[in-house]
View 1 (cartoon, rainbow, N blue to C red):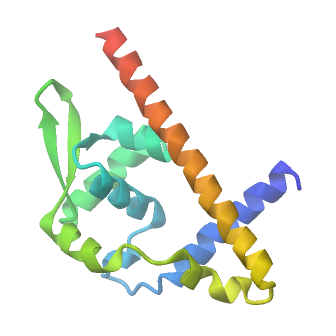
View 2: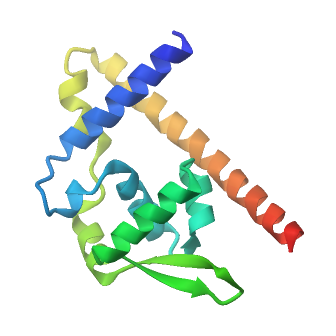
View 3: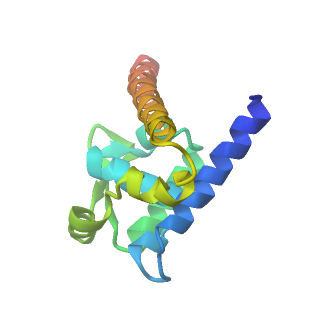
Length: 158
C-alpha cells in the first residue's frame, strides 16, 4: 500500500461515514463532517479555544474559525472571549447541542461499517475494527501532545 492508497481509503471512508448518517436537510446530522468533529470536541472539551480545536483536529485555524461562526449562527455552540487573552475565543456547547448529543451523536462504528465489511470473515472484520481503534488511540495521544506543545509555544511568546 502506498501513500496515494492511504489517501484514497481515507477519502472513501469519510464519504461512507457521511452517507451512513442518513441526515436530512435541517438536521444537526446534516452539518458537514468537519463541523461535526468540532462539535464532538467541543462537547468533550468545553471551553477549548479555536487554536486548540485546530491542533486537535489537524484543520486550518481559519477553517475552524469559520466553522465555529457557522455553528454559533445555528445555535449549536456559544463563544466567549477568553478573560486571560481577549484575542482568543472559548467555544462551549449550547443547550441544544447537549440535548442532541445525549441521544444522537454517538453512532456505533460496527453498525456503520457492517454493510461495508459484510463480505469479510469475522476475523477480518474484527481486525479492521481493531485497526480503527488503534489508529484512533494513536491519533488522540498525538493530539494531546500537539495541544500541549502549542500551549507551551503560546506561553513562551507572551
